[in-house]
Amino acid sequence: ITVAALRETAAGERRVAITPEMAKKLRGKGLRVLLEHDAGRAAGFPDVAYADADAEFADAAGVLAQADLLACVLPPDDAVYVGLREGSVVVGQLRPYGATGRVAALTARKLTAFSLELLPRTTRAQAMDVLSSQAAVAGYRAMLIAAEASPKFFPMLTTAAGTIRPSKVLVIGAGVAGLQAIATARRLGAQIEGYDVRPETREQVESLGAKFLELGVSAAGSGGYARELSAEERAAQQQALAEHLKSIDVIVTTAAVPGRPAPKILTAAMVDGMKPGALIVDLAAEGGGNCELTKPGERVEHGGVVILGPLNLPAGAPLHASEMYARNVFNFVELLVHDGALQPDFNDELVAKSCLSHAGEIRFTA
Ligand code: NAD
Image (cartoon, rainbow, N blue to C red; front, side):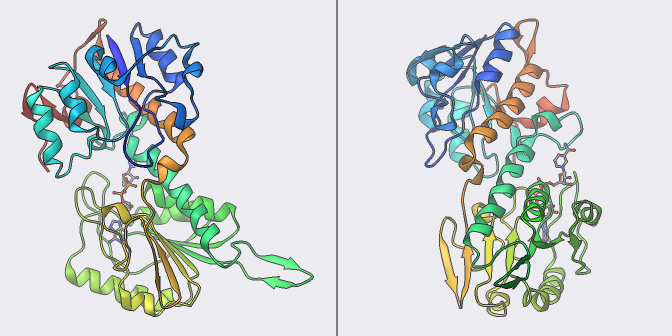
């Protein structure tokens, strides 16, 4: 079996789906590893780094022509799907929600595609959970970007030039990214609060040494995720939050509901009430943003408050992001290989639930 990866082509993408460490492990399982030249270079893994792993290299067309399984970080162009042999397997973050254009190419080539975002969040799936591994990178980087862009120090400083009070940082959405953002802000010495609509997050926020912000709105959904708020709940949340924001220096927002646009939590009026020099880093920018004023990929200034909407944060720490991602991919590939052959067992819920297309049919509809 040939397991392959291309150089990722999305703008700004620097991660790679197969690292030297994972190439070695794949070889150890008796699989052949085939990479496009320079596939890992932007992540910090030049081709020579794969020498120990006995990986082979080819140009993109050569890789596609020989691949039995193509691992990718982001959804490839349709041309990639068309270049694969009929019936090949694709594993990656394929953006399954509403991705109709991609899906046509998948079915036309009868590709068996697994979209790792669809894995259930169960204990057994944890080792393959790309949402978690990449969200951890995103949360960490979002807080570093916030610390860098804020006009204030995060920690308290006692100096001969006077005492600097610590920044007040609020993280909205305490999932994987939010908790990592909180941990990062703590390490930088900020005074930190976390908020989420899932009640179980209180303990997680507090265990990181942050204060849980209680707004009296609770919205646990299924599968460990939040559900969308009703209009009344959203109004109650915004009213409670607006007053509180007046004292906050930095907000990092990470709130998401799978398959839905990012919930709009911060309105323009709420931003109007914030201190000049305050900063919002909207990690949900990719899904439209948690702040009404966010422009994905841009910096917006609104009455002295700066709103950043950074995109694809994991690509900015490509070495560790790739290491974690590639481990997730390896663990998933292991599930698909039985007796030296690629044989996805659709009775396994991890295989069945992550399957986007198989044998010319779409297996997932959002
Ligand atoms: P996510 O990216 O879908 O959402 C981020 C956070 O935003 C969530 O905590 C969500 O509750 C919150 N949110 C949504 N709407 C909100 C609103 N209106 N206001 C405030 N907050 C809002 O979530 P995620 O980080 O991928 O994790 C979600 C869940 O999955 C968590 O329960 C996590 O513990 C669980 N999880 C389980 C496993 C596992 O067992 N394998 C692995 C990872 C995560």
